[in-house]
Length: 269
Image 1 (cartoon, helix red, strand yellow):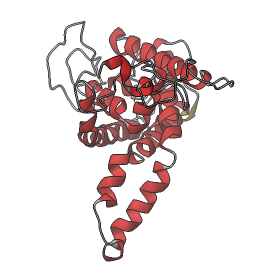
Image 2: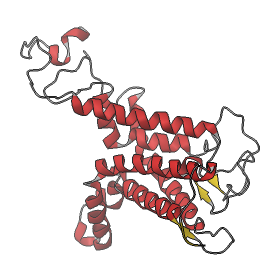
Image 3: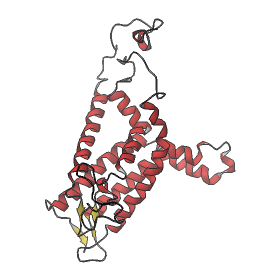
Image 4: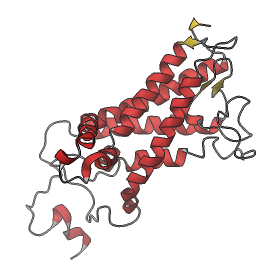
């Protein structure tokens, strides 16, 4: 059987010349998704490589795009976990230690798979709309077989969330030393809380907490954990988009304060 005779063009399928009989704006959700993802990818890529305005030494604000910053190339004070490496070449982002894993976590996320499968690869672009591909192999071959390692990226994402939590805590630092509290702290903490919500709402986390249990009645603690994760899991798509926005907002705020474009309104010190 040739590739052109497979999928929606298979001999036993209805012969419909049109790509779809839908008359609504079915193309709008894929378009919005593509624009949203592209905007984040372009912004995050530029910010990851510019190596400027990512740390506010007065208040210990560090953008999540550069955390943890463990190279001697990092500006003084931004290496909250010390220096693990020497100077990095300019073509490497300072967050190279974790950025590939975070990218892998997002790319293999069950929701994001749906988002870019439909909006970028048109597989399919919408319900009742024929996809342009004549053959479908699913996630059984390269490169899509890599999607099956999502659970391992989840473990790394948990560690990174702990790192971001530490960054948010030590950011309660005053300009003259000691405790301090400003608008930047609200943004950093809100971003961390939402990142935790997105990470814990992951399908892999739901499976880890209770997916392999056969008798919930024998494991009441894990059953309770599973029910809480399930509640978050119901909002996984929403949290996936919100955290893209909070990441950009947090980085943008730190950049503006660090560059001197704006000042951080302070409540304490």
